[in-house]
Image (cartoon, rainbow, N blue to C red):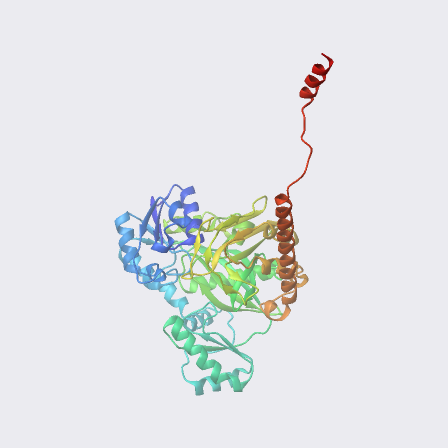
Length: 499
């Protein structure tokens, strides 16, 4: 096993990896930009090295500088976390060239699955069901029109080189295709340096189901079941859960087998996720593969009892998987909410500032993976996620009720968060009873209830302020009272009179 690893990331995921590594007796090395020098992950590490760059984000993307720190510090391996360099084949390759173990897949696997068009072609050859659409990159609008007409509307345009909702457009009519195609190209070029687009038939009202897989360097593969990530806003996941309320044992087994086939097709090693669209007729289609640890991995950990970060470390250190597929069991239900510094009453605009007060909930069945503390400065340079909260219950409804209670007890001052929005979702009948899909927020969510919650909160705050003001005014008014004489003095005066 490794003696010392470097975490090439920041915030919540850096702390998450460090905790598991420390439990295994592994020393942690943090890297940080100046703006992060007081963040918890820097102080939690055994060693910390400062990076320099023109911008904070560029520091965490500087492969040469990170490799140099790893060599100087004596790190044997690098964990990339998620985001930043986690899905960059050149980073995995640079680690290998430097004699440092990359705690993740081989660069060739990342390259194969990083291109949406190459991944679709590879999956089709492997017999993995894919959504009807193009296998090649498209940059020509005339060809795009022809393909969309053949597929039939609605269609969805996607950036060939990226993900996360960037460069993605839904098109319902032919007259809207060209302006959306050109807009998707511009966004794709800006985000990924590649304006190539591919076109798929748009599956209406699907569920977003993903399968977690693990694979060691000896050719053994297992899956750890599914996560339902259908509650999304602008293609960004907000709430995830495991297991899904729409899958039965047979479908889970079938999807797990397909996910393993997909991983084998690209010679995958370590932890990865195969994402699917799941339609109302229980058909599922390959969406993409995330060649890294997912933000939502804790819900899988909570229902399987398997620590995914520890498994990543063991696999990277050359160990075989310690369990077989038949050993995997799922118990209870887990839900995760992402705690983002965004204002849900202002179109979810990111918010920044200093956290002046923080009280994170705790108790049985509640887990908080956080990268913040009181005094932490939330800057505009990074993703708005502060952390995530996970609850587990014997069944789905208990997990939801526990999450609602935990959200009510989560207190953050100094920045606005999405907690009011998350609370409203937990109370929504369609969510509570599992009747939702990826269009839930767009079509079913009641934003009036969110405004009502805001109004109620404002009334409570105003009432508290008014009460406090009245108490202050009362305290300022002099109170007229008779001078009090002690009983001892009264007795002494009485005795003097008698004498």
